[in-house]
Image 1: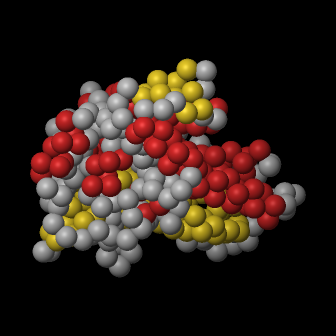
Image 2: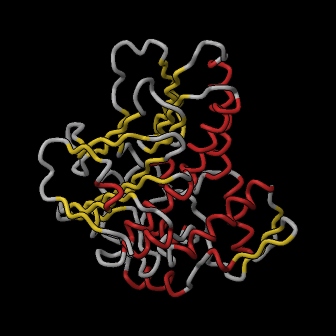
Length: 344
């Protein structure tokens, strides 16, 4: 489950001197460290607000974990057994919104492929090792065509036409969690903050005299290198999907954790995709969908998802940015030739 296992692909830049009203609060959740960086006027009890954020993030962790006991496990067992199950309004909202994103992405983002992720060994806290799963097993699960469209929700009760559906929201829920954390902060009267959940982040307000700023890490994962920096405007989310942190390795060959639902194999043609968007869950899902999409098709998928700021690093190290993204990145060093494209 990516929300629990993905290590940082973005790093929040260090504070500049003189900003003494900025405080950082760290929460251990989602298998990583979530940092709340708050610029407060001192009129808000930030410690109490951070406690509320912590409780909400821990609840989301418990409810939506893909393989540990919790609400999602109960939902998946009901689907596998062909039984109806009553859902909370919040669960209904998550599932319905994810189903819409699957349709808009042309199936490249598909939270119904939990069985495939488990087959590849990605339903575990440690990195899987050994050869890839047998091709006939992969083909069998793909042929079952699990999809969010197999689900039906009426009067708060979920049923599925396909028992092969196994839900895994690892490519979606962290976006919802970051957005929810910012909502709690704003409701408490905090106007300026950034929430960084293991490298994926969202912001409200400003750092001070300038916007919040984030660094896009280099996909080679070495020495804290980064490709460039972007300023994060209020209400924006910066999310990255990448294959170099979470993978299955065998005899020196790495297969990333981002699977293409259409064939069941890792999207190893890409190293990372970073997006900037105004909705946390959509930013999270879009980063995954655009990593799955092929080199030629991803601009069309981005346009369909309404995401105009995209930075994509291919497996060979070549970099492509949309016009909207290229205009916002301050490149670090010499990243090489940057191909800039316009969306259809």
